[in-house]
Image (cartoon, rainbow, N blue to C red):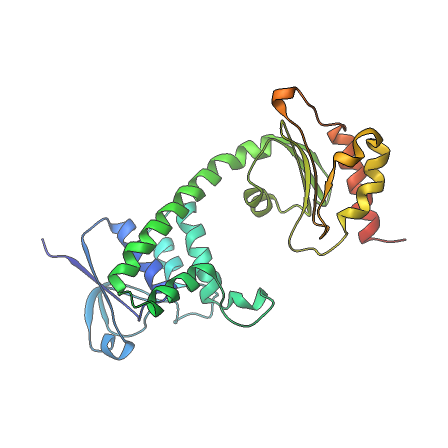
Length: 271
C-alpha cells in the first residue's frame, strides 16, 4: 500500500502541528515534505497543509482562504471532528499564527512553542527531526489536556463560594490553577485544601494589591498573622498547613471569601 503523501509550507509551528494532527486523524503511513511555496505550486499530493498552492487529491487544509482568525491546524481538527484536547492544541497554534504576540508587552512572536521550533532550525536540525521532537511535545500536551478535561467537573463540584460576577471563586481541593483560570475565569481564585489556603489574582489584573488585604486577615486571624505569606508583587497570598501535624486553616473559608470579595469590590469600585 502506497504511503499517503502530505506536503506543507516551509516548516513553521502551524505546518508542523497540522502534519501532527493529520497523522493522528488518519492513522496511515504518511510521507511528509515541507516545501517552498513555489515548489508546492507545481506539486500534487494527497493532502496540502498551510499553503494555498498546488493540487490536493484528497484535501487542502489552509487558512489563507478566510478572514477568520484560525489556522491550518484548526482546520484539520474541525474537518476530522477531533476532540477537545486536539482543539486546545490547535488553539495554541492559532494564537501564535494569528499574531498572538499583540497581547505581549513587546514585539515579536515570543510563543514558547514557536521559539522552540525556530531554535531547532537555527541549531541545524532537519524537518524530520522537527516532527520527531514535536510529536513528543504534542503527545504530552494532549495527555495534559485530556487530564484537564477529567478534572473540570470535579472542580465545578468543589466550588464552595462564588461571587455574582465571578470576582472571587473559592474551591476546596488542590486543583491546577491554570485549569481553573481557563475554564472558570475568576478574578481571584481561593484554594482551600489540607495544604492550606491561598489567593491568586488573575494575570489579567494588576490590582488590587493583595498586600493591602493583610489588615483584613489580621482581624480574622490575629494569632497567626506572621505565618501568612504575602507576595511582594501583590498577586498572591497564602497560609500553609502540615496535614501530618493535623494543622488546619486558621480562618473560615466562606467568611474569608466574603471579606476578600468586599475588599476586591471596594478596591475596584471606590466610593
